[in-house]
Image (cartoon, rainbow, N blue to C red; front, side, top):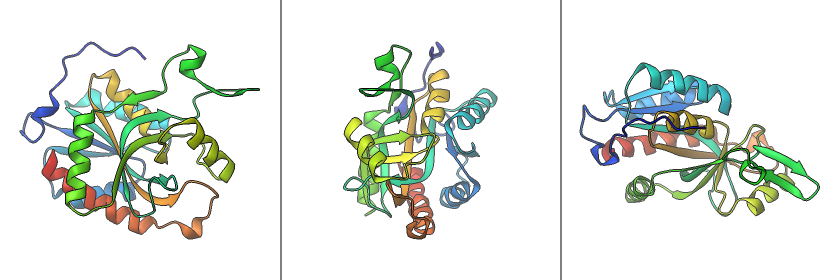
Length: 231
């Protein structure tokens, strides 16, 4: 995707309202409600339900960014955590946003778009901002890990797929369905992007009875209370 040539607002301006406006994009209303609860009507933040999946999230984020000026875009919500990286009830701040299944299967294994020569599958987040937010979450005594967040079109449901992803993508920490689409929309406007996931379940065999969605929404709310102080 060709990035639009547009002056970027500095990350360092965060917290200097009215220059800073942050767009937070969720997949569903329950995530939005948790975040809204944490923001306490702070006028710097707008929260959008972008829909489930990378494509619809990209379309709705692009529309929102065309209608108003923002200086930072955040894809936020619940997601799956990779064992040994992010346990249920913890947070992941994305160091990269990776379209994990965008590519081609071959007899020798999976080839991403970079290997195929067709484009990109990785969006680098701002390391200084990631470090600052991660540090603030730790100081608030919230369990958090910084690492790559994978965007998938099909949620992982087997041990085999989980192992394949962790073997192929170094440091894979969380999995969700919208981050790469939100990230592409932000890149198109020349804006920085982050992804924050609250872990409701482990990546692997699908077991809805083991999901802790309420707990994940609670820690998502707690994380966004910290964001208000950091940004």
